[in-house]
Image (tube, rainbow, N blue to C red; front, side, top):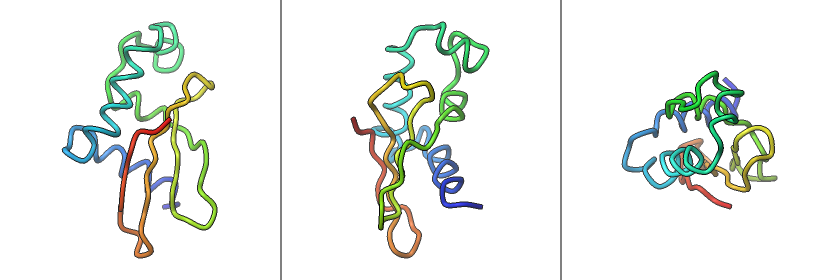
Length: 100
């Protein structure tokens, strides 16, 4: 499993958790409110997708040079927000945030 795949799996595993509340969950709820139903219909086949369907759409926007930090966002250049996930030297999850 690549580092990017591990990061996406960790994001999925944080849905609905205390740690994910102000990162993953906030990112999803914000975008479900802000983006038109047509965007969701085109990307997921549903105008009102589930949290998991939204997270499944995430794409890597950038990986920080010299650090294990990954920024994921929605496809199609529709937002400035990212889910930023950071790992320590031992590969353990250190931090996750919604950032703009």
